Length: 163
Image 1 (cartoon, rainbow, N blue to C red):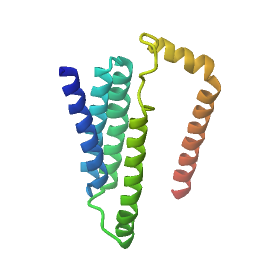
Image 2 (image 1 turned 180 degrees about the vertical axis):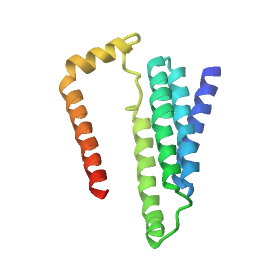
Image 3 (image 1 turned 90 degrees about the vertical axis):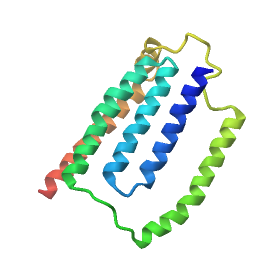
C-alpha cells in the first residue's frame, strides 16, 4: 500500500511539474519545474528498483543538463516572455492537440500496451541492457552517436559564423 502511495505522489508531482514547465512565462521558473519533474521521474525509477536509471537521471539530467539550461538562461538574461498573436493562436491549436494526446494515452492504457507487465521477472538488468545495446543494436547506437556529433559540429559552425 505504501508503494502505491509513493508512486502516486511521484506521478502527480511529475505531471504537475510538467504542466507548470509549459505554462510558466518565466524561463527560470520553467527550468526549476523541469528539474522537479526530472527528480520525480527519478523517484519513480528508484521505486521500480531501476537504480541505474535513477542514478543516470540524477547525475546526467538533473546534475548536468539542467545546470547547463539554467546557466544559458542566466547568460542570456531571459525574462518574462511577451504575448503575441501567435501565442493566442498556439493556445487554441494546442488545446485540441493536447486532448488528442490525452485520449491516445487513455486508449493505450486501457488496451494495456503501456508498461512492462509481459517481461519476465529478473530479465531486465544493467548487464542485459548493455548486451542488447552493444551486441544486438550496435549499429543504431553508433549511428545515433554520429548524428549527435554532426549536430554538435553544425552548432559550432553556426556559432563561428555569427562571430
